[in-house]
Length: 206
Image (cartoon, rainbow, N blue to C red; front, side, top):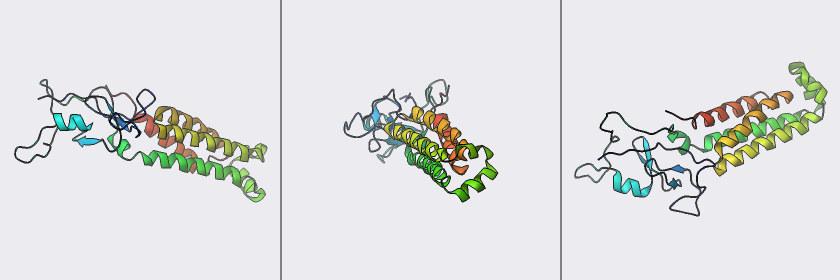
């Protein structure tokens, strides 16, 4: 028996938003073998693959006399393991809340940075570190609020499955926040790094 599969990929704007087996539940990825969209409850890990319930039941070999899945992945006759053209972000699928939490953290820090600029004492000290903040004055608060909301919009897109679009929305907003101090610098770094990680997990792997 030979198991050829496309590796597990996160749902994006080109894939169904709901699970193939549970129309009322959001899909978190696709089956490595058949490509059906699956929700978190339908996700069946096997070795380095993620399978839907049908493929898991019909295609995964069992250890003789145990009824348990046998370890390893079937390899093609040519040798090696065939995963298909996509990078397999299994960890990101299981821990999707990590980039989501990082996006939210970046947004909150940038908004707080804008609010802090309303304080004359903080503004005076902040201008000593970031001189270009001085001309913004109270507009820094407005800019911080706008950029924070843009990042939250990217977070919403990420949670809806439009992960690439969400990351591309967060990166420029985080970079532009440097005009007000980058969410105490930490917000800028978190926004950029977390977005790059999401983009890297969607990069084609040939």
